[in-house]
Image 1 (cartoon, one colour):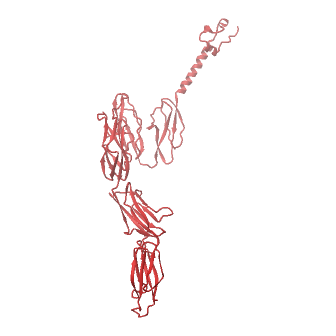
Image 2: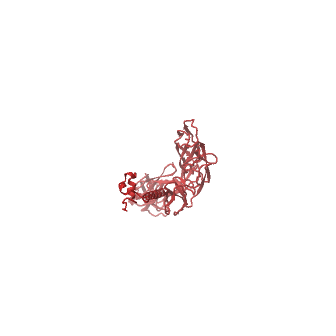
Image 3: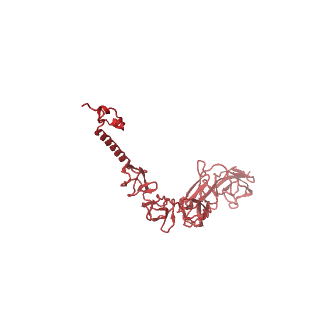
Length: 476
């Protein structure tokens, strides 16, 4: 019998759906064997099996966010996984998150997912938030660093109900971004009947102030106005960006605890919000100096005032850190600085450095706490005092001595005693003195004849630089 060339030919069988249309029907009678049909069915079944099997697998990837890397995991769609852990220097591993929702051992995955590690700074003060979903899907507890704004997880689900809000055990609504006290807390879900039912909240909310200025210890009430006034759900949540500085309670009462500022935000149940910036300051700053003289100099003798010490008092008298005091003084930095400021906390010292020229150089000193500054204090730095004049003068003639800078006090005396010499006239100004020394004929004590004697002119500045000028007075 002649071999049928089309027997077991799958391509031929797939190409022709009707046996009557197959070529060779009359010649061969049997156009396709049962083996060919079975082959087609088997190949199709196997292809469908592998396609379905591939479509049933998903990949769970892990972003360690700075921690040790974690390998991807392939799982069946609709199943859970045994969550791996990871490490990071200086941090404690808190858990894996999808968006802001913590993943637990009961979480079911139905698509490829990337989980992100969340970390807590090693040694940081923390608290735990637990969730009672009141019949809804499970929400994993989470641990947070104190002072961190709250990031709420995805809302739970409950058949036949719509989620409304999380509240604390006192039924105070807690919204995303809230600043919670640093203590463990349980949040409880509230629901309304009806799936996917919209919450009828306000269309807008405004505050009675956009900016509030308080003194530490003061309080003030912020008032929120919602529109429309007849909105069915008027619950709001108050929060502070810095509750250590300024707190706000559930009624909108703000309290200033220390120097600084914070943003106070009120948020409605449907996410509308309004904010106010609140400043907390001291009332006054008083600076006290160790000297009543606002003049310093790096020249002169031990009597020269070379530095001034300062201390600060504030009202109200509240505890402050050293960094809260900001001291500033002009002409104290750079190569042209004529003074140096050393400050720490509520104390400071201003010291003179070398200064050139013939004029006093002002240095303006201030101290600031928060937004409040002291009245400026002006201190003058003196250059070196120098005296110039003739070193010899004839008795009865005028001797003029000039000073390089202003002098606050001039004095004249005979070096060998006041009984040897008298002064016919003395004219003084800030920069000059003119004297007429007159020698006596004889020393009234010894009786000796006086032919010459020295006189001493002393100049003292406001910073107590003290300089003597000596000249010889002779007879003609």
